[in-house]
Image (cartoon, rainbow, N blue to C red; front, side):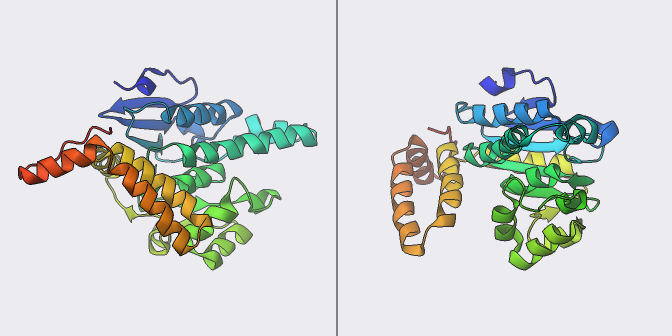
Length: 268
């Protein structure tokens, strides 16, 4: 059992199996909206991932046939109308912290999306490393529908890198829903499946069986190289790969290959 598996969340469900931490947003009667408390709890969990070497992969999903409908209208949106500028800045900084925590945690994050993923729910899917979905999934960056800009929680930086500038612009200016098949065609979803939970668990288990330190390095470099030229990226990757060559998992892979066996990685 990983240290994270012992954490008992108050505002979502957390389960662990084989180093895979599954986080389930669990307010199905309202399509799993976020509250101030669930935002903060997600941030704590992803930040704790950096200290939990036994945690290999995160899976984020929603209960009851939907992923997440965004911020709770009554528990978040209404109270925000009563805040002054400083209070609003504290809120938007806190929501941004969730994406920062997701991108900074070394474990790959898989979003398993069914039904509605809207507003902050769309952002959580976007900020994940891999996205699986059912054909019923609908993703809407609907901030403009409530009088806000599309530049929310890193959307203007991350979304164009996934689906391209023109497609991201269309979604952020219109707030319309991106259908599942459209999301797969555009590269937002890695694939569609009718067996979402099973396929997400299988993919997570496959990744969890790999070299954990090296996976963390891959995620770090994928993020860092956004802001690098090609030559700088090649130099940075040379350093990163040399560090991976100092790990026991690298030695295990060689010894297993020489013995014509499958390596059993341990993340060190």
